[in-house]
Amino acid sequence: MSLFPETMRTPRLRYERIDDAVDAFERYAWTREGREARERETRYVTTTPDPHPKATADALADHGDAWADAEQAYWAVFLRPGEPDASGDPVEPGDRVHVGVASMDALWENRRVHTGVELYRPYWGRGYAGERARALLKVTFEVLDVEVASVAHFAGNENSRSQMEGWVEHYAGSEDGYFRNAVPRDGGDSEPWDLRSYVITAADYRDAGGAPEVELDPEDVPKPTAEPTDLDRASGRDEVDDGDSDGDGGASA
Figure 1 (cartoon, one colour):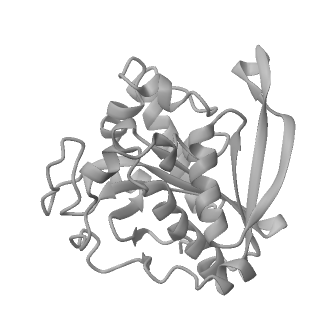
Figure 2: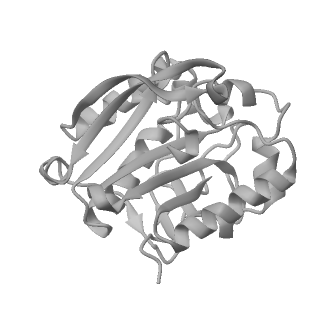
C-alpha cells in the first residue's frame, strides 16, 4: 500500500508517480549534460546534469525504492490538455508534455515534510511552482497528517525566494531561519551554501482554507484545464515569479 497519492491534479497541471510515468530516455532528454539551459536550471541546486541515460535510470529506480519505503515521493509534472506548451500551442488530449518534477521528503520522526520542485526552463514564469506547492501541502496535512511543511532555497537564488515567499505568505507561514554554510557545494571544493528556510504548520494551512482546488488520485487525470495560462501575460512577468527550483536539491529538496 502506498502512503502517497499516485496521481494528482491542480488547475493547470497533473502529477504522476515518476518511476511509473516516465522512462529513462524521456527524463534524460531534460536532465542530460549539454542541454541548453540545464546549467542554469541547476545553478542553485545540488542536482547535477546526468552524464548518460544509465544515471537517469538509476535515479528513477532510487525514486521507486524511496516511494515504496514511504521516505520520499517524486511526481512527474505534466501539462493538462488546453494548457500551452513551450511553443504556445494548446496541449491536446493524450499528449504528455513533461515540464518538471515535484517532490517531498517525509521526515517521520520530526513529523515534518520538506517539499521541492524542479521546473524546466521553458516553463518558468507561469506560476506552476506555487500551484505545485498547494498540491504538496494537501498531501502533507490531509494525507500524511504531519504537523509542519518546510521549503528552502540557497542564498542568491532570488527567483526561488520570490515565489516561495508568495505562497508561504498565502498560508501565513513564516521564515524558519537563515543557516550559514548549511550544505556542501561541489563535493566540498567550493564555499558551502547558505540556506534560507520557511515553514507552514497544519494550523496555518487549515486557517487559510486548505487547498480545495487540488484533487488527489482523480479518476480522469488528463482532464482539460478550464483556465490555461495566458502566455502574453506570463511572458511579461519577471522570472522570479516561478523560480528555478525549491530547496537544496532541486527535485529532491
